Amino acid sequence: MKKRIFALLLAGLLTTSMVSCFQGTSDDPKDTTPQQTLPGGDRETDPDTDPATITFQDVDETVYTLEENVKLLTEMDSLVGAVIIKTKVTEMHRVKYHDVWSVVEYLGQQYYVKSDDLTNADLTGKSFTACADKTMYVTTDGLNIRKYASAKLESLGTLSANETVTVVATGDGWSKIKYTKDGETITGFVKSEYLSETEYQDPNKIDFSSYFTPCDPHKTMYVTASTLTIRANAHAESTEKGTLEKDETVTVVALGTIGESTWAKIRVVVPADKDGDPDSVYLYYVNAKYLSEVKGGESATLEGVIEQWSAIGFEKLEEAITLYICTDSCWIRNTPEIISQYIVENNKEIENPKFNGVGNRVKKDALNVVALSEDWAIFTVADKETGEIGYYFVHRSVLTTNPSGEPAPLSLEALLAANPGFTACEDAGKKLYTKQSVNCYVSAQTSDTPAAVLASGTEVTLAATSELGNWYIVKTADGVYYFVGSQLFTEKPSQG
Image (cartoon, rainbow, N blue to C red; front, side, top):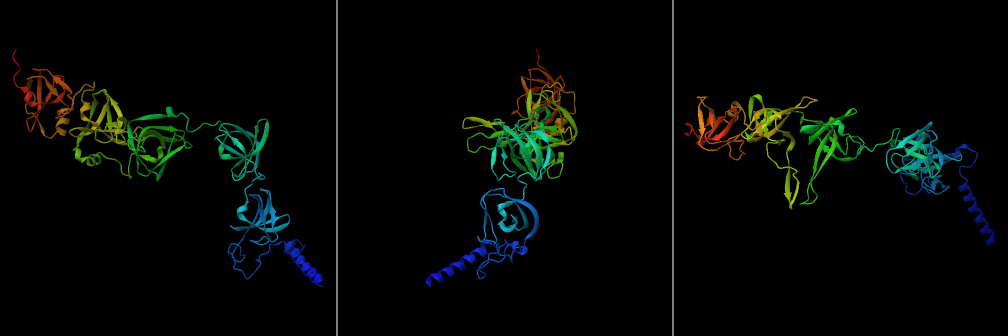
């Protein structure tokens, strides 16, 4: 009797199990719809697995499994009736989609499957557009050849820059290629963005030097974009070296037009990581479209520059004057300060990050001077392309009125305008004579290097006197004006 009861119980269990295993396999169409009721109705439901809280979107697309051993379920979050898809890139048809779950048709049945396990990308290239075999060049090192059109799936190997491949079809940002290696033809997929019809050139190594014209003087310019990328070369694909923010200043050393873009070659100083180490100075590139000589939308004016440096005491000239460099070379600067190009730290000479030189001028170079102080001159430079005016500074000790570049100070009118403590002599032809050898200066400061030396007994013309009586402005026989010490002159020539 006990054996009979046990047999009946076993038969009941087997029947229940078989019903569960064969759900959705009858000829009744409604049986092909996945079950939407979780077993154990009394248990707490998960909103990600509760059909009442999930809204599916109807779709009609081919999808592929991305992993091995993907589970197809007849009920969400349950292993009841599970089918295990052991091979990745198994094709099936998706009919409903949700961020968490998808409903797919596979071998005539419908199942639930996690959406993250699927992709609707055309992994096998079925819908790719075929093309005549086209030879193309690889534009990067280490380009993966994929077995399928997905970066998530296995690589068949890599390609190097300028290797060639044969493209047979394209689609979804991928190219289907044929590639011969060690006598074997490999078919696979690569990202189309890393292929080119022309032989590849490393954008960091292309020589664009012939396209650039030096900025002399260097330009101080301002960033107009919210963020501007600094690049290793004048190419949009070259390596990024950093970024600049709006209104940051850059020192532009050259400009060049390449194709339809104008690039600026800029000087970048990177502070040392450790105290005592030298700073690093680099030449990089930015798109000049996002640079301007105007900061904050306001053009620089001479009045604004004079006001900015009011402590220097600049006086605007009624008319600009032409002056000439009287030394073999000199720095022009973006501030009226003499800041050395190099400094010494820990017995090493390093680039001074505060250096304000923006270009060199050589003897006889003409400058359009528009304002003067006791020690400095402001001159203008017009941009050849835009015509915009830039203002720069040069020390007066390197200027002359002589086009030959011989040392000489400014014209008398300019000297008097810049030195209000001096008054022109009423007797314009009064002669004076040196009592001894006399140093001549381009300003009323003996700290300057003498611009000339007059021998004892030299005749000069007195042009102006100072309020304190300790300086004269005199005119030499060659028509050049100098500052000299008044006590070194007499009104009578020496006898004998």
